Length: 342
Image (cartoon, rainbow, N blue to C red):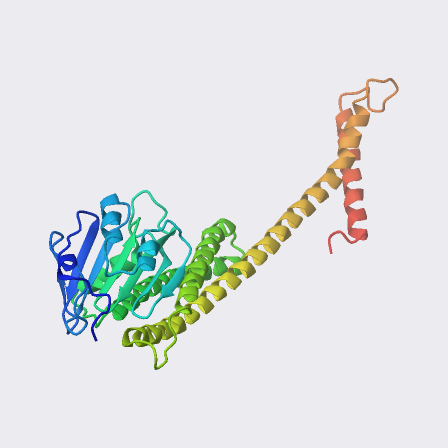
């Protein structure tokens, strides 16, 4: 099948001035070969394979180069160059383009959980992707390709990128479940220390994963429907979207389970901390009640008035101490009688 949007030879020989991070040409068997950045970049005949171009949209010259590609539709170029971040997807009779939320990939000094947009457009013989920050999807897919994994076509490459992100999210979920298990063990053993503080990052990460999965779900549900009137490229895209959606639904259920566990543990920790505070207040109240009579006795004998008992003699303090002890003992018996020690 020929690409109706295939450009003239002059455009096929157009070279990016700068801003292309990497480019690969895949043969009919899906084997990748890197394209030198000073070589021509353009779509291949779908029967012979396809090309993958990954672009840094921070570079103005790269944006100018993309804006001049007539083998991309005007709508696709507009989305690739837009500054919007929210996930979206659109398509025409021959191509699919859109934007999904990804996360930073090994960017020093940055929050690696921060969501950043990843833009893409693919059709017969090509896939163009781009970002303004290093993203996980493209980097992980490239590492698999460099490892020798064959890729059958643009749709398969797009699916591979999403799969790598979902696999990384599954690893994060396993780490979250391990952390939740550790917190739960300490809560059940009543060995509370900083479990409430540890729950904060866990819940925040789970919320970010849920948002990212929701973004994937929103764009994958917009893929062209698989019917007899759509092109072969759209048939493959629809099938890939169905597979990815099933994986996303499974992961999202796991994220919901982690969130539910985190909320339960937060309530359990709050209840146990409240019990600990109540016990401390109870002990403090008992101590206060027992010390009030001796305090009253010492205050009474400390008055600077005449006629106080035990004022004369060297052992008056003994009598005052006995009175204070007896008063505390009487208070203790009274508290027991009232049921404060049950």
